[in-house]
Length: 154
Image (cartoon, rainbow, N blue to C red; front, side, top):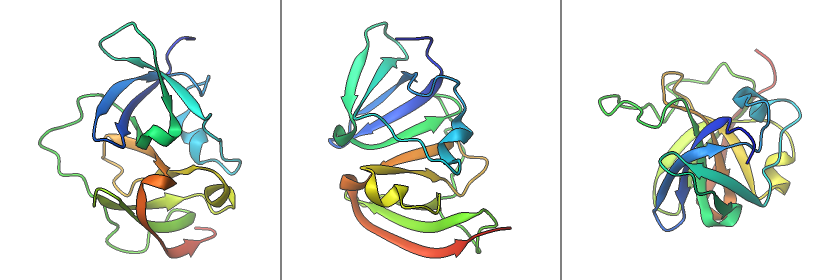
C-alpha cells in the first residue's frame, strides 16, 4: 500500500466495523469525492487497520457504507445532526436514505447520473461539525432512497 492518506470507518453489511486508512485517492483530498467530476470507488478497496500492519481487502458489496472521518475516536458526547432543519444551501440533490438496518440520514449527493449507474454514491452529511466528512453509501444496503429537493446554484 502507498502511504495511507484517508481515515475511514468501514461499516460492513453484517454489522462489523473496521477503522483504518485507505489510499485509493492518492492526494487525500476528501472534497474531491463530491466534485463535479465524481470519483468511482474500485470494486475492492485496501484498508490498513488503524491498529495493525496487515492489509485487508474489502469488496464494495461487503460494505453498508464507508465513512471518511476526521478522527477514529470522534466525540462520544456529541449528538450528530442527521437531518437538515430547512432546505440546505449546498448545491446538489438533497436526499434521504434509509439503510436495511433501519439507520436513516439525509445528505447532499452530486446532481449527476453517477449516483444512478455506480454501485454506490458519495453523500455529504448535514452536520458540518460531524466527524463524518463524506459517506460512500452502497446502494445494495439501502431500503429507501428519496430525493427531497434539488439546488442547482446557491
